[in-house]
Image (cartoon, rainbow, N blue to C red; front, side):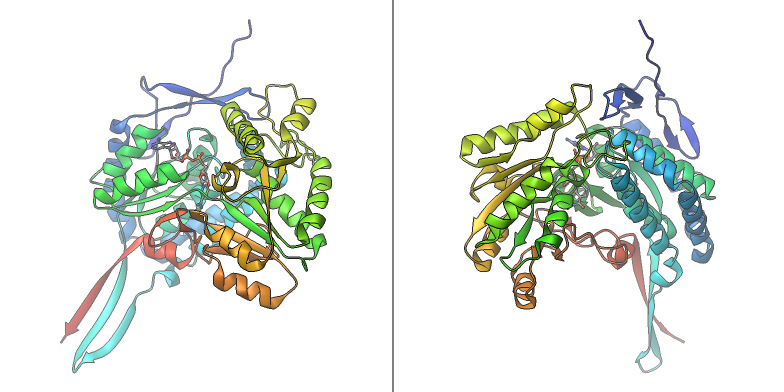
Length: 487
Ligand code: NAD
């Protein structure tokens, strides 16, 4: 019998790797093959406490380091990431399963935030007003918050931690990072890269684990701010638990994103954009298009075009350059998504493409494959129209007008992203003003804001005040003193 050896991952606390010390270990398989990549420890609250203590000990000296010196870590990190971009891409492909093109995009998006953070000397400048009263001046100065907890999901194992880490660190904070236990290997690489870029021990600590670690981060009195990205139920839990412990919280949550197609849409633009939005990352993106709302005669043109594109979409291992869509993250995710396909059929929707069949035919291997699925004649009340499926399933709802389409979109409890495909400026403007979501696309399938702007979900897609990235990110990871002086 072959002996399976896979590295056991370790926590990084105060600049030292910690052996798991009896913590239960969870297997981390390659989603394309099921083969073991590593084992991750499910740490306990004592590990979080040790990490917070290390962070709290290191943070004052880091905060006292001039910001122009702190950002040199970001400059060096940027160079290291550029030099290792192909390795980072391949690591993402291996542990997450997405295609090489998707993973390459993820690396670029992570780099954008590092580049933004290089501007921290300007970004965290305060403000002064002389003579607010005769002989009295007022100044507002930004300081780091202290020790911050960062909790991240599986679907962007490099990019999502990098939405916040460079900003938090350049602003002078110390961090306890808890990555997804389903994709923990990229986080190890992130820590190695920051340290290779010259970051002092204790500023970036890594604690692997699951719920117990998350709860400990939310409740630990030494942590002042918690940034979370993940599913809606866990986001609610984190928001409530951490804010009840007196912390500032940003909790980026789940989504159900709508793509409205107007009768005047240019299908040469719309169809590839919808395909990439719905099936990129195997539909496991918080910005994934999940529902097409086809207005008037658009449905009869767009559905056959999407069905044809689906039949040409090659499902396979992300590492194969010919692959158009990789596997989902785990076998239970595949079963959960297949359950939604069953539910759609039971609720009366029309199956146009059945991803269960295409994937089983292509791969009998140990990978977690599911082909692209499209449903037509979906009613807004159906579960496939309302719930976040987080897999390669696209539902089409037919409406008679843009106003009816807006009503369908706005009835969703989520408000992460929404797009319209049209050649009419008037329709685009009516859309922008009427839709209740925070990230909007006009003839764009994935309306992901670049790093200079906030990742701005609404409704049940976000809990908190300040979003991730952009100036919101800088404000989240800094706090102010307002000084009124007379001399
Ligand atoms: P998840 O909620 O299962 O996990 C996210 C984090 O929470 C992980 O670190 C995990 O260990 C932890 N966690 C999981 N269950 C927990 C529990 N019961 N108690 C405490 N902590 C728990 O999310 P996921 O499946 O890794 O990621 C996919 C989800 O993330 C989707 O819902 C997606 O929409 C969302 N997401 C949102 C955004 C956004 O910007 N709004 C971005 C990426 C992903």
